[in-house]
Image (cartoon, rainbow, N blue to C red):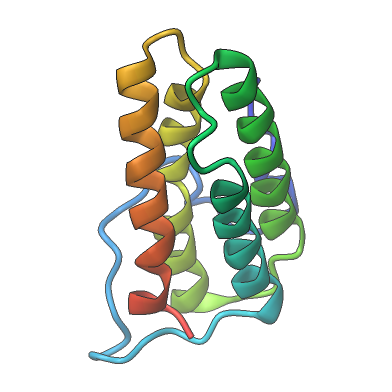
Length: 127
């Protein structure tokens, strides 16, 4: 499944993520829809906790995660450097989604763990 999610956001920097930077040592202010979307993705991971041994279950989880991910982009109202940093934060998730429902359970479980940690890191960079 391809992610046609970036259409709603403006700008031309959506191809490649860079390392996330703080705002002079402070967290960036994110729009409420983004923060809610991140919380929703964490809830999806929690809902499937301990149930991801089957590829079909991981496919269902990935579909829910991608829908929520796309909604974050659709509701994107951020501008300027905060917007750029949000994209630097969000775009690495695409690669993790692609590994979640693969046939390699070990790789899929590792990707789920990385995604869980990445979502937890949101609070480090955004408020």
